Image (cartoon, rainbow, N blue to C red):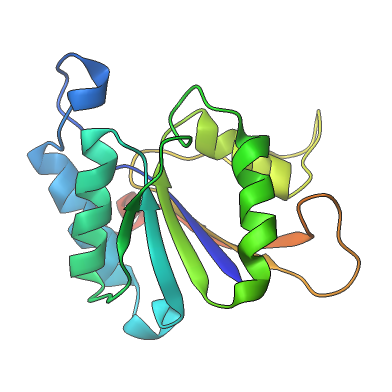
Length: 165
């Protein structure tokens, strides 16, 4: 199983936080990010999870369209900035044997905490950092597994590597 973790694209600076929508820059970030990948990288994606916040839902919709994915979009209530990543890590571990890959569009600090938890990053170790519209791919390894399985990082990319925006 691969788990693609994505932080939402740039949103407008408005209130309330849950209703902030993508900015034009955010939409451009998603186009740049999608242009990095070929369809092959996401051929096994069976679901796209997103938080209930507007900017995450819009990001998930745009990624689905930009990568021409057929996977359904699912609103997941417990992947917002203040949620406990261990809870969703347990859920992911429990469904990992069903086959297929998963994209999750969420927020910081939740995403950084989840990635670091799955990769077993501790204290002074290098940490995974998500800027807006960053995507990381984690792969569930075979063999001995901890509480959430044993995960390896495949990539972490941000659309800024392709442009000066």
